[in-house]
Image 1 (tube, rainbow, N blue to C red):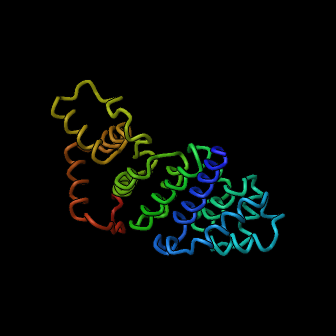
Image 2: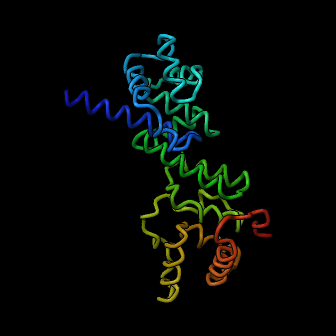
Image 3: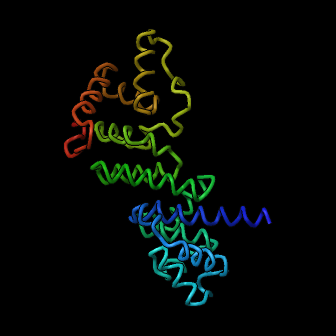
Length: 247
Protein backbone atom coordinates (compact mmCIF):
# COMPACT_ATOMS: atom_id res chain seq x y z
CA UNK A 1 0.00 0.00 0.00
CA UNK A 2 2.82 2.42 0.86
CA UNK A 3 4.49 1.65 -2.45
CA UNK A 4 1.28 2.39 -4.34
CA UNK A 5 0.76 5.67 -2.49
CA UNK A 6 4.36 6.69 -3.19
CA UNK A 7 4.02 5.87 -6.88
CA UNK A 8 0.77 7.82 -7.01
CA UNK A 9 2.33 10.87 -5.42
CA UNK A 10 5.28 10.68 -7.83
CA UNK A 11 2.91 10.43 -10.78
CA UNK A 12 0.78 13.35 -9.69
CA UNK A 13 3.80 15.52 -8.88
CA UNK A 14 5.52 14.80 -12.19
CA UNK A 15 2.44 15.45 -14.30
CA UNK A 16 1.37 18.62 -12.52
CA UNK A 17 4.90 20.04 -12.50
CA UNK A 18 5.36 19.16 -16.17
CA UNK A 19 2.11 20.89 -16.99
CA UNK A 20 3.04 24.03 -15.08
CA UNK A 21 6.67 24.29 -16.14
CA UNK A 22 6.33 24.04 -19.87
CA UNK A 23 3.04 25.77 -20.60
CA UNK A 24 1.96 29.37 -20.52
CA UNK A 25 -0.80 28.59 -18.01
CA UNK A 26 -0.38 30.71 -14.86
CA UNK A 27 0.22 28.77 -11.66
CA UNK A 28 -2.79 30.42 -10.10
CA UNK A 29 -5.03 29.08 -12.85
CA UNK A 30 -3.81 25.54 -12.23
CA UNK A 31 -4.38 25.93 -8.51
CA UNK A 32 -7.95 27.03 -9.15
CA UNK A 33 -8.89 23.78 -10.89
CA UNK A 34 -11.77 21.99 -9.24
CA UNK A 35 -10.60 19.14 -7.01
CA UNK A 36 -13.03 16.77 -8.73
CA UNK A 37 -11.43 17.54 -12.09
CA UNK A 38 -8.01 16.80 -10.62
CA UNK A 39 -9.26 13.45 -9.34
CA UNK A 40 -10.85 12.62 -12.70
CA UNK A 41 -7.57 13.39 -14.42
CA UNK A 42 -5.54 11.22 -12.03
CA UNK A 43 -8.06 8.39 -12.38
CA UNK A 44 -7.91 8.62 -16.16
CA UNK A 45 -4.10 8.52 -16.22
CA UNK A 46 -3.96 5.54 -13.88
CA UNK A 47 -6.56 3.64 -15.89
CA UNK A 48 -4.77 3.54 -19.24
CA UNK A 49 -1.73 1.65 -20.45
CA UNK A 50 -1.20 3.66 -23.64
CA UNK A 51 -2.66 6.73 -25.32
CA UNK A 52 -3.09 4.98 -28.67
CA UNK A 53 -5.38 2.32 -27.13
CA UNK A 54 -7.11 4.47 -24.49
CA UNK A 55 -10.90 5.02 -24.54
CA UNK A 56 -11.98 8.33 -26.03
CA UNK A 57 -13.47 9.53 -22.73
CA UNK A 58 -10.20 9.11 -20.82
CA UNK A 59 -8.25 10.79 -23.61
CA UNK A 60 -10.61 13.78 -23.52
CA UNK A 61 -10.23 14.16 -19.74
CA UNK A 62 -6.43 14.06 -20.04
CA UNK A 63 -6.11 16.37 -23.04
CA UNK A 64 -8.58 18.91 -21.65
CA UNK A 65 -6.75 19.00 -18.33
CA UNK A 66 -3.31 19.42 -19.92
CA UNK A 67 -4.46 21.62 -22.83
CA UNK A 68 -2.76 19.39 -25.37
CA UNK A 69 -4.02 17.43 -28.36
CA UNK A 70 -4.16 13.63 -28.33
CA UNK A 71 -1.96 13.28 -31.43
CA UNK A 72 0.95 14.94 -29.60
CA UNK A 73 0.69 12.41 -26.78
CA UNK A 74 0.45 9.48 -29.17
CA UNK A 75 3.46 10.62 -31.22
CA UNK A 76 5.50 11.09 -28.03
CA UNK A 77 4.48 7.65 -26.83
CA UNK A 78 5.64 6.15 -30.14
CA UNK A 79 9.15 7.37 -29.31
CA UNK A 80 9.20 4.70 -26.60
CA UNK A 81 8.08 6.68 -23.56
CA UNK A 82 5.66 5.59 -20.84
CA UNK A 83 2.25 7.23 -20.47
CA UNK A 84 3.54 9.58 -17.78
CA UNK A 85 6.78 10.46 -19.58
CA UNK A 86 4.94 10.93 -22.87
CA UNK A 87 3.04 13.82 -21.28
CA UNK A 88 6.28 15.57 -20.35
CA UNK A 89 7.85 14.89 -23.74
CA UNK A 90 4.78 16.11 -25.62
CA UNK A 91 4.74 19.29 -23.54
CA UNK A 92 8.43 19.87 -24.23
CA UNK A 93 7.83 19.48 -27.98
CA UNK A 94 4.85 21.83 -27.82
CA UNK A 95 6.61 24.59 -25.92
CA UNK A 96 10.21 24.49 -27.17
CA UNK A 97 12.10 24.01 -30.43
CA UNK A 98 13.68 20.77 -29.21
CA UNK A 99 13.38 17.77 -31.52
CA UNK A 100 12.57 14.28 -30.24
CA UNK A 101 16.21 13.31 -30.73
CA UNK A 102 17.35 16.33 -28.70
CA UNK A 103 14.83 15.54 -25.98
CA UNK A 104 16.18 12.00 -25.81
CA UNK A 105 19.72 13.35 -25.54
CA UNK A 106 18.71 15.80 -22.82
CA UNK A 107 16.89 13.18 -20.76
CA UNK A 108 19.95 10.91 -20.92
CA UNK A 109 22.12 13.76 -19.58
CA UNK A 110 19.94 14.44 -16.55
CA UNK A 111 19.02 12.18 -13.65
CA UNK A 112 15.30 12.40 -14.47
CA UNK A 113 12.81 14.02 -16.83
CA UNK A 114 11.81 16.23 -13.89
CA UNK A 115 15.35 17.66 -13.66
CA UNK A 116 15.39 18.14 -17.43
CA UNK A 117 12.09 20.04 -17.25
CA UNK A 118 13.52 22.38 -14.60
CA UNK A 119 16.58 23.05 -16.80
CA UNK A 120 14.34 23.69 -19.82
CA UNK A 121 12.34 26.28 -17.90
CA UNK A 122 15.58 28.01 -16.89
CA UNK A 123 16.84 27.85 -20.48
CA UNK A 124 13.59 29.39 -21.75
CA UNK A 125 13.91 32.19 -19.21
CA UNK A 126 17.38 33.06 -20.49
CA UNK A 127 16.49 33.15 -24.19
CA UNK A 128 13.17 34.93 -23.66
CA UNK A 129 14.61 37.75 -21.55
CA UNK A 130 17.79 38.46 -23.51
CA UNK A 131 18.05 39.30 -27.20
CA UNK A 132 20.68 36.77 -28.16
CA UNK A 133 21.74 35.98 -31.71
CA UNK A 134 20.67 32.73 -33.36
CA UNK A 135 24.25 31.48 -32.95
CA UNK A 136 24.20 32.00 -29.19
CA UNK A 137 20.73 30.50 -28.80
CA UNK A 138 21.97 27.44 -30.65
CA UNK A 139 24.94 27.32 -28.29
CA UNK A 140 22.67 27.65 -25.26
CA UNK A 141 20.60 24.72 -26.48
CA UNK A 142 23.79 22.68 -26.80
CA UNK A 143 24.69 23.64 -23.23
CA UNK A 144 21.22 22.63 -22.05
CA UNK A 145 21.55 19.19 -23.62
CA UNK A 146 25.04 18.76 -22.16
CA UNK A 147 23.74 19.57 -18.65
CA UNK A 148 25.45 22.92 -18.19
CA UNK A 149 23.88 24.80 -15.30
CA UNK A 150 21.19 27.03 -16.80
CA UNK A 151 21.22 29.14 -13.63
CA UNK A 152 24.80 30.17 -14.34
CA UNK A 153 24.75 30.38 -18.14
CA UNK A 154 23.38 33.87 -18.79
CA UNK A 155 26.53 35.88 -18.13
CA UNK A 156 28.69 33.47 -20.09
CA UNK A 157 26.26 33.76 -23.01
CA UNK A 158 26.47 37.55 -22.93
CA UNK A 159 30.26 37.40 -22.79
CA UNK A 160 30.31 34.96 -25.71
CA UNK A 161 28.46 37.54 -27.82
CA UNK A 162 30.58 40.38 -26.55
CA UNK A 163 33.72 38.58 -27.75
CA UNK A 164 32.22 36.69 -30.73
CA UNK A 165 32.80 33.24 -29.23
CA UNK A 166 30.84 30.04 -28.72
CA UNK A 167 28.88 29.99 -25.46
CA UNK A 168 29.62 26.31 -24.76
CA UNK A 169 33.34 27.16 -24.87
CA UNK A 170 33.02 30.28 -22.73
CA UNK A 171 30.85 28.74 -20.01
CA UNK A 172 32.02 26.36 -17.30
CA UNK A 173 30.08 23.13 -17.57
CA UNK A 174 30.20 22.65 -13.81
CA UNK A 175 30.11 25.95 -11.97
CA UNK A 176 31.50 24.29 -8.85
CA UNK A 177 34.57 22.83 -10.55
CA UNK A 178 38.05 24.21 -9.96
CA UNK A 179 38.81 27.33 -11.97
CA UNK A 180 42.57 27.23 -11.40
CA UNK A 181 43.52 24.29 -13.59
CA UNK A 182 45.91 25.70 -16.20
CA UNK A 183 46.56 29.04 -14.48
CA UNK A 184 50.11 30.15 -15.42
CA UNK A 185 52.74 29.73 -12.69
CA UNK A 186 54.02 33.23 -13.46
CA UNK A 187 50.82 34.86 -12.17
CA UNK A 188 51.26 37.32 -9.36
CA UNK A 189 49.11 37.05 -6.27
CA UNK A 190 47.20 40.11 -7.46
CA UNK A 191 46.49 38.47 -10.83
CA UNK A 192 45.40 35.25 -9.16
CA UNK A 193 43.00 37.17 -6.90
CA UNK A 194 41.67 39.16 -9.84
CA UNK A 195 41.04 36.21 -12.14
CA UNK A 196 39.51 34.19 -9.30
CA UNK A 197 37.03 36.98 -8.54
CA UNK A 198 36.18 37.52 -12.20
CA UNK A 199 35.68 33.88 -13.16
CA UNK A 200 33.72 33.17 -10.00
CA UNK A 201 31.42 36.11 -10.72
CA UNK A 202 30.71 35.37 -14.38
CA UNK A 203 31.06 31.55 -14.35
CA UNK A 204 33.30 31.38 -17.40
CA UNK A 205 35.90 28.84 -18.47
CA UNK A 206 39.49 29.63 -17.51
CA UNK A 207 40.97 27.87 -20.53
CA UNK A 208 38.83 29.89 -22.92
CA UNK A 209 39.70 33.11 -21.08
CA UNK A 210 43.45 32.43 -21.22
CA UNK A 211 43.32 31.37 -24.86
CA UNK A 212 41.23 34.35 -25.97
CA UNK A 213 43.25 37.00 -24.17
CA UNK A 214 46.53 35.52 -25.40
CA UNK A 215 45.48 35.18 -29.05
CA UNK A 216 44.00 38.66 -29.13
CA UNK A 217 46.77 40.24 -27.06
CA UNK A 218 44.34 41.62 -24.48
CA UNK A 219 45.49 42.43 -21.00
CA UNK A 220 43.41 40.76 -18.31
CA UNK A 221 42.49 44.04 -16.66
CA UNK A 222 41.28 45.42 -20.01
CA UNK A 223 39.15 42.32 -20.54
CA UNK A 224 37.62 42.72 -17.07
CA UNK A 225 36.96 46.40 -17.70
CA UNK A 226 35.14 45.75 -21.01
CA UNK A 227 32.88 43.14 -19.42
CA UNK A 228 32.19 45.19 -16.30
CA UNK A 229 31.40 48.26 -18.39
CA UNK A 230 28.83 46.36 -20.43
CA UNK A 231 27.12 44.81 -17.45
CA UNK A 232 27.05 48.15 -15.65
CA UNK A 233 25.38 49.77 -18.65
CA UNK A 234 22.91 46.92 -19.19
CA UNK A 235 22.00 45.78 -15.71
CA UNK A 236 18.37 44.91 -16.48
CA UNK A 237 17.68 43.62 -20.01
CA UNK A 238 20.28 43.04 -22.71
CA UNK A 239 20.15 44.74 -26.08
CA UNK A 240 22.79 42.72 -27.85
CA UNK A 241 22.49 44.04 -31.39
CA UNK A 242 25.90 45.74 -31.37
CA UNK A 243 27.72 43.52 -28.91
CA UNK A 244 29.93 41.55 -31.24
CA UNK A 245 33.62 42.27 -30.93
CA UNK A 246 34.97 43.82 -34.14
CA UNK A 247 38.03 41.85 -35.22
